[in-house]
Amino acid sequence: MRDATVMLSSPDVDSFDDYVAMDGGLGLERARALGPDGTIAALAASGLRGRGGAGFPTATKWRTVRDAPGRHTYAVCNGAEGEPGTFKDRAILRANPYQVVEGLAIAALAVEAREVFIALKASFERERERVLRAVTEMEQAGLLGELSVAIVAGPEEYLFGEEKALLEVIEGNEPLPRWLPPYMHGPFATAPQLGWSAHEPEAGHAGRHESNPTLVNNVETLATVTHVLARGVEWFRSIGTAASPGTVVCTVVGDVARPGVVEVELGTPLREVLANCGAPWPGHRIKAVFPGVSNALVGEAQLDTPCSYEDFVRIGSGLGAAGFIVYDDTACMVEVAAVLSRFLSVESCGQCPPCKLGTGAITTALDEIAAGAGTDASIELIQHWLPEVADANRCFLPLEEQQMLGSILRSFPQDFDAHLSGPCPSPRHIVVPKLVDLDDTGASFDERQMHKRPDWTYNDTDETTRSP
Image 1 (cartoon, rainbow, N blue to C red):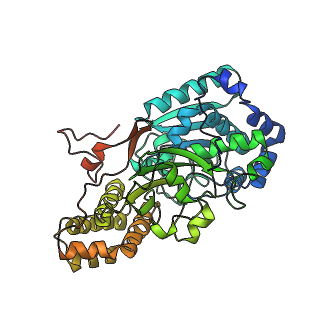
Image 2 (cartoon, rainbow, N blue to C red):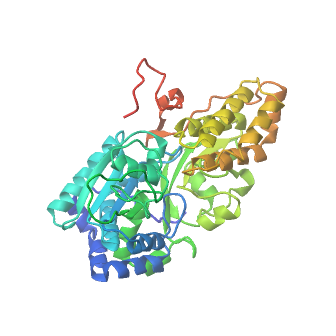
Image 3 (cartoon, one colour):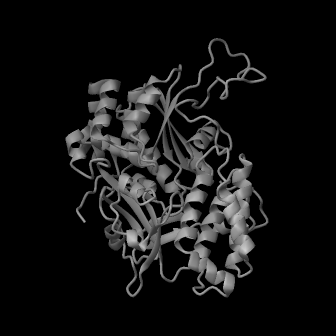
């Protein structure tokens, strides 16, 4: 595997002086020279795609926000990483938070935002300390000019990372996805979302109501922006594939000898990425790899697929945030399905009844099958709900349930047949791989997740308070 390290500095960048010594600040300097239109044009030429999961062209997203009508424009860094199997944004912030702050400043310049937000979970204490120090030093050095930077500490819920719900948290609300996307309806907007309201949306407001179009990018995207502007389009295009240029930061956990975070060129075969983290274990074979819980699984026969957005789509899956959960031949896919489905069911916010009711019913049926109490009716119930669970969805969560669980049912019907006819042939405890920490000593997962209720409280103690 070719060394393509860009974002994961080694050793960690611990001061602004160290960052300047490695040409920190050149990206923002270049953006100021190009101006907003020139900066967006450079990103368009680079072919950079967002690293938050969808792989949407970054320049198109920025241009849409810049051209949207509105009086106030904001830029937001989404650092609310919470998908199972993913740790790459936290690894980037630990290695070099300065590149992320600089990328956010470049984004603010391009969309002409005077205020920006960096949203992190309150539980990410180490990362918040690193970001706060970076912002403080860069402000004191005058690099950020008059740009106002706010760091927002949010709740533990998975939906905090959904960009519409993230804006709600910035406003001080619960992480409940709103109807309209950020580029149409940003924070502190005075305009109604759906065009009509029984009352004025902001009492005492004078003048035209505004929607405040807002740019939201994740940590890795903004870090990459900094390097594209500093090193140039040709350099960036020389790495990766034609449709997916650059590098991608991958997380690999599960049935591997060395769980970790590794940065590779886009286009590197998945098998090579996994082997770098010690998968499979000697004497075993890989049964399935899940790109988080957002896409269809990757089977054993597909492990040579290049890690690129276009190649993962070609096999009917998606690269997502490049967080790979590996299960070998000792894992029962019924158990895996039950655990991952329960995560999505619990984390569903309940605003869209088909999602909350459907994921709940599916999870209950999977639990019955896993416990040996399932019947053909359990399978029929799952098949009834899967097509309907995403009806009227405000966010992608129920589609994740469709894609992830549907791929398990299609790929491993024999595991379900075995559970319906007798005891599990591969009994083994499966945990939700929601990462709390990941370093050279290994991976640690959120043990409280298994105690979380559908109303986002916990039953592991007498307390029923929300997570921080």
